Amino acid sequence: MAEKELISIGEAASILGISIDTLRRWDKSGKLSSVKTEGGHRKYYRFQIELFLNDLFKMAKDWVSKGGDLPSEFYCPNSAVFQTKLTRMQDLLGGIAELADRFPLIVAVSGEIGNNSFDHNLGNWPDIPGIFFGYDMHKKVVVLVDRGLGILATLKRVKPELNTDTEALKVAFTEILSGRASESRGNGLKFVRKVVAENPIGLLFRTGNAELILKKDSDILDIKDFAEPFRGCLALITF
Image (tube, rainbow, N blue to C red; front, side):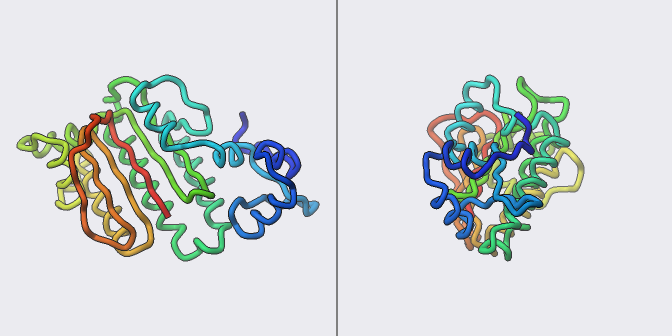
């Protein structure tokens, strides 16, 4: 499916199971924004409508635990594809008036986490390369997942004394490491923490058997063991 495929407001309403008038109201409120064509008609990206219907978090968790194929809307096999999709998300967020003051930060946090996956698994993907990247403008969430090495394996390259995922996750979000490529994942996550602490953006991050939660406008790290070991890294960004 072409990511740029536009469909009519009637087809979009039919897919969603709502009336055209309801879809117009959603457009006006920013709940589900349309694209205006040269003739002034409302159009929608097909993938945008399908994203609206999907439970992204469940889909991401299923992929990281079971593997398999992903729809092209969500799969980024390399960083170039990820950057293209990230730019598309930026354009959509930029069209939502209530997010005018923070959409660049949402994009920056998403970009930092996604780029880390590629930077620190390049040539070392255990099985499936690339990442899951999806977002839902209605639910105001962004989901990024990789089936990579995880935080512990990444940081043990320079801090071999680390033994648990919980320890590694704390280091990644709190300690300044050198700028060498193998260590920059941790430095990037400290940037993420700073952005979340100063803005109404939340983060749930899982790796191995550790889970971290950063609440909106808070610098407090809530890190705990997670019952089900998690392959790679998962990030749920809320805004």
